[in-house]
Length: 503
Image 1 (tube, helix red, strand yellow):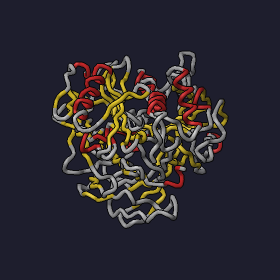
Image 2 (cartoon, rainbow, N blue to C red; image 1 turned 120 degrees about the horizontal axis):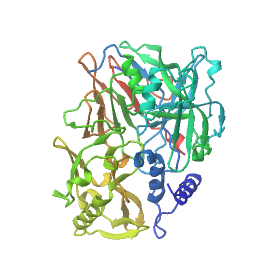
Image 3 (tube, rainbow, N blue to C red; image 1 turned 180 degrees about the horizontal axis):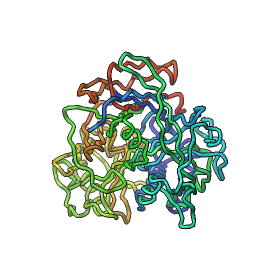
Image 4 (spheres, helix red, strand yellow; image 1 turned 90 degrees about the horizontal axis):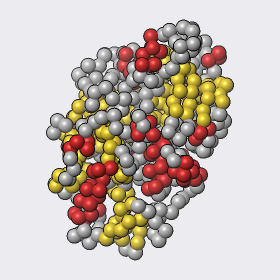
């Protein structure tokens, strides 16, 4: 990321509102619940969101379930919003005695890491109104080190998630360095310790449960990670690596090797994230591209208003420099450079005859209309391998930016990935849909869905249970209703509304 873009991003993080269009006024089982909060104001200009997305997915731009699961419940608060920067985090308890850490939920990375004591460059306070903590290995009775001779370290070295130099002895700690495109980064070493969670049983009893996992202990941070405005204790990676918590819990028989989410697209936010399989009749599946570090899919074509865009299919072919990635940690969507202009032109052509005025604002294609966008803008179809199509409504590619007279200003929230052949489908696309990441069968499925409704979750016993986004363990806060899960055995994250925390 260029320094100017980073400066713009940091400026956006520090102020309450930025004006996008100067002439326009702003309009106003296993159960896991994770606390989600917003690190930016609800309204932010597209260029700030775009800069923030590049900051978050800079690494992307560079470079059958076991039985006996419990219902694991973590406290969750927060909301999803198209203008939210997307800083979602949960609380995890590690060590003995257990210590609680706030960690960012990130499907674009693999490893759980937290700051350790001592730490060079780690912030000591957070603008997110949370108390920062650090892990102290010597104060945990269940801590053990991971050495360079450990087979798990050797495996991580092969995938770039760990480092051990030739001069290191076999007893040297297994280290890691995650360096980002702007020079920011974190480094530390891997440790093994206890992860604690509450398990809800079939008769609604809550049991204290735990599992031994490997995670990162960061003792150095640089660049933006040293800033306090969005500081947290670490990052919780939801990727496919064998050292991801998902993989470790699955191998230990604690969670299935599948997770799903359903993010509400309304301003009130909310939704469900399930480590388990949501089962609904309309879900269609497409295979994951094999041997890729991210959730890559084979996009074959794009249709606007029923007409397939004149874009060579090779534009979407997966390689080291191009392909399509599903990333819930990205706010907007990014289209491969050669596909972007045909996409935008098709939307303009379809909307031009429906009392819609179009204009360019700061490089973004925008429109003004007094009508409902569903009445004047076309449907978009993303067509994937296996005859799996994702149908997108106008609010899956448009963002409301303000008003002009009696009309509302809408801008295309999909951005051109300049000089890149990578397409990234972020939250603007994924919201209001059930999305299932079936890692056991290496496929991803989806269907449009009202994420405020109950979801049908498959259990290891072959039964299905219904989970509602309003369910939450009362251990998080007494303001939430009691969790009622008769026999669910899916690992569930409830993304709940907490508007008071978003102000």
